[in-house]
Length: 160
Image 1 (cartoon, rainbow, N blue to C red):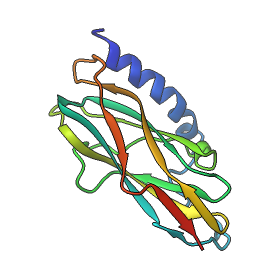
Image 2 (image 1 turned 135 degrees about the vertical axis):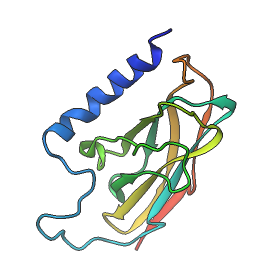
Image 3 (image 1 turned 180 degrees about the vertical axis):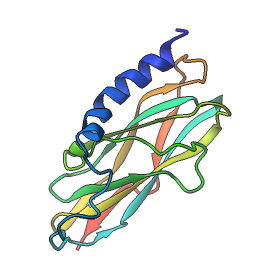
Image 4 (image 1 turned 120 degrees about the vertical axis):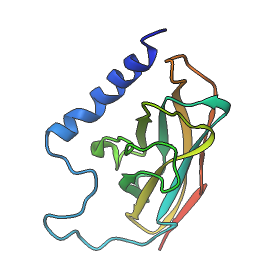
């Protein structure tokens, strides 16, 4: 298990790096003007991980939503988060209904409940969607798997 965190990072990065290498933006700003979008309320969700008293070295979560109603517009660092690096996500999943988000820290690892990302949403059509976040993998700084839960600041989104 000595190399567990590195295996996690390699697997996680292998899904994100192809999009980055292809020049895919991490949000939809810039380029041609975007078509008019429906308003999502809330327009962003703060995502947190809770590992109790254990230090968190790396995490991978899955953010779920109804892709007919809402899509992910951007994934950004949490303003009060304990992870200095921006979370990683593959933009090709942002309209899929299940978007993986991952991150890691080298150095001082946070513990307890930690805000790890802000998921910005955009409406696709009027309606409501449930929102959920689940842990796919959670590791201590030494690479050992640890238990924990994922939380979102909202459980539903309404598009008008």
